Image (cartoon, rainbow, N blue to C red):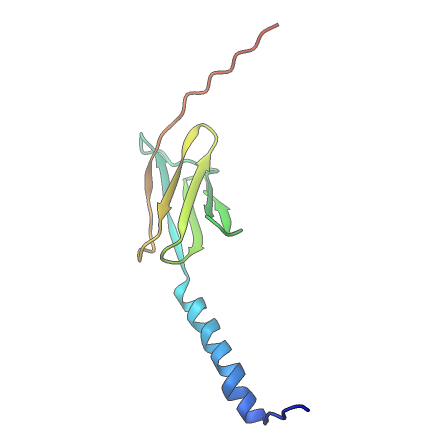
Length: 112
């Protein structure tokens, strides 16, 4: 035995709630943009920027600028060879300037 659902009831019960959920989730996500600089104020190109726990990622441009889709509550990670990694919790802001990436000291010892 099976139940026949009228097309109008299907739209009201199934389609509309799913559509509203998709619209609400898309509206909650905004783009976060900003500038990444070192301790001297110079932009850092090529910094890996990603939303932790997702596959969303980007890299900073030649002046250290970036733009990435993120929602409030996401954690954004910044990594670059020669600098300490940094993670920042996203709030309601749409601009985020990271100005305190610390350089690390790398020592390479080679021998024969």
